[in-house]
Length: 442
Image 1 (spheres, rainbow, N blue to C red):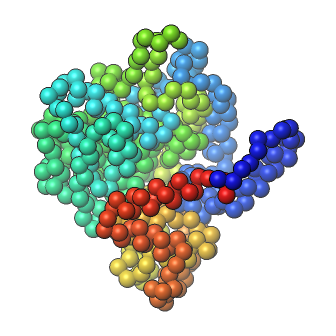
Image 2: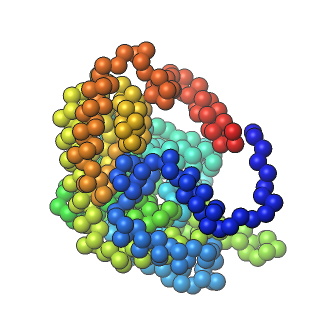
Image 3: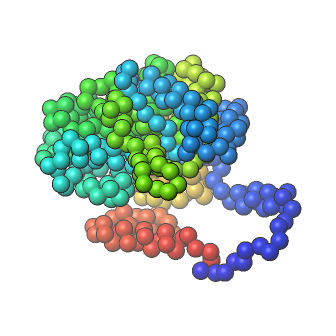
């Protein structure tokens, strides 16, 4: 790694801020709708309000409900509003977290500890999940000593229910479904998995980190959404990221449980520390109170009416984009997505090369694998760019069709190679080395 000395003296604040702004000039242009992941944009008015609410509690520490009782009040009210939105009953409980990964880590830890208490005969716990479920479950299972059992999906990213049932064993402590899955926007058959969970008496978690703050409002806007939340028999818990379609700054997510009795297994306490009894409701210790304050504020600022209007705009854009994709020679939408997330696939074109062609046109679209595809998370602001995006997509598609295999290089070739490796251990090693090299000063 190259050396860089710590500054001896400070610089004028405005100069440093100008340097920070200059560094951003090469970043993706999400403000003008040219990004389809990572940042959720509902317009300047909502963005500015959410930032102002966040800034009021930027420095307050969410670790202590005693020093900052206002944060405790707001968190409890955010949880109560989300329980109302996601079908919870009077006994439901939950907590705000700093993001989807922490939410899923908290959920897996809770299910594990519940199983340790209620099913102590299980010594080698397993978690059953579709191939399309978020890898944060794999991450949590890796950290917590749990084996993941992956259930295959078909070409439309729909999980095979017979295979799902067959994957369950006497060691299974948790079932997972997505609403929707991130890669292709497919809502798993939550009611059917719920029936299996009831029959087997196994914890069933619905990962609605992507959909929890949009699916209810898509339904309110008049679109069909199948049952997916705590109202479904057999669902014990659900997660939803507020900083996605809730439009708060990063990071704010939520975990909800059917009862506070279940939520108790989420809490960690160490009573023998000289600094006092250490107790946390979720994984994070110190964290900014801004996520809670911004969530509380934006819920009250927008309300059901505001969120339904935004969901309607996002659905309008998503459907127009999907129609345009399906009308472009060589391209198709994968499966049958029901909300604002979908993926672009092809049976004839190299979609990674297509992604590079779109990147050259200043559109940022994530590449995916199994099958090769391009990811689209559609936001309200995308209604403004549907026409220009589809025009560029048609041009880029025609250019990609003319490419010979030897013409494909750069990131497209690298991603295609990694995605096609039969030895997934080798793919992992390449990714580890890539990140290890990436996060160094050159």
